[in-house]
Length: 130
Image (cartoon, rainbow, N blue to C red; front, side, top):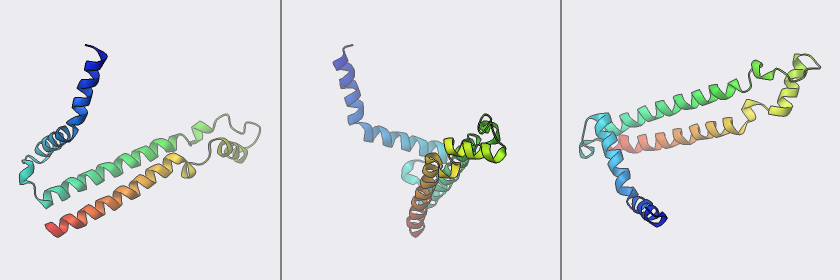
């Protein structure tokens, strides 16, 4: 195989992406709901969206819990070594910042807000169809 053949193969896959994407979604619908996609109704989609929202929120909570570990007491060892607990915390915050002000926490909260808004919009449209 030459590099050109590999590039041609990858281009072919990219050109058919929409078909592959739909085939994957259709298979996931059948596997999850036990129905053909053409038989799915608005209530089925609402149920899927409810499951998606719940899973997304759980993942976000897990990410926040993981990030909190990076700001825990155990990680503060070695900071403010020449002072008391307040000095240690001030030194730690001067170097590492606060979780609430971190980019990661902001991104997680923003993503939660955006996905909650999307969920509410979709649910509103689907309930009108149900």
